[in-house]
Length: 244
Image 1 (cartoon, helix red, strand yellow):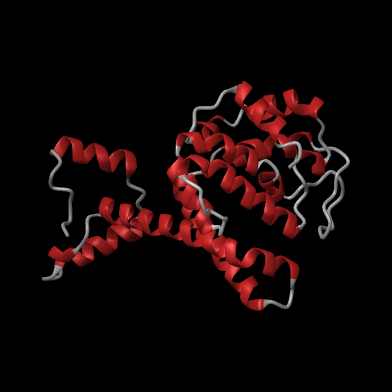
Image 2 (tube, rainbow, N blue to C red):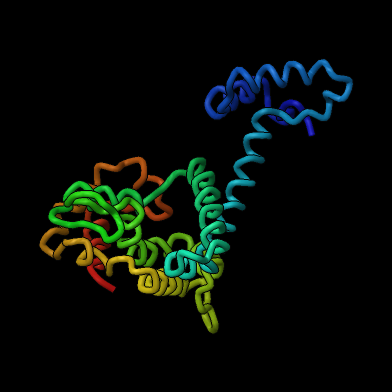
């Protein structure tokens, strides 16, 4: 451990802190107090601590996927299954911590087109007037099509995610990861009553251009995708997400 990243020059280290460190006065004060202790040499540098926190949260993302694979069906379909519901709440917390650091990508970008253009739609279990599609559902309905598209850019990561979700990977390889992950998501959607793609939330193929134009404004999330994505790609994803 060290209280600074000593392999960097002073100029580069100052730049690192300036552009990446998310700090606050309380943490600064704690470090200053710790520096007075005779064991202060054991104190980790702030940027190193931040990086370690990110690693922990990424590990949490994997755990969140495992929880979804094991408990989503049970927790949604049996309100008395407190074990499953407790686990799902914990999984949601882990996932939130993870993407709070890593950001989101196409799933969220494409969800905005849905909620922007939805009409005459309500969702069972929600006492909200039409039009209303919960954010989670607006993300989920395009997810299988999105991961079939993005898997080409990161097949090993998609294959890993499919495994955590308990997909059937017998005789499969990373090259099959997009289909394996999409198939498992569709299975979970059917088991938990998620609408069957965009048609399930009131859209038709004729709506694709407008949906894509709306979502294309989400530049930050689209840029975070593992695969470079343009307007035509978004249209193709929406078309593939009409139903499964």
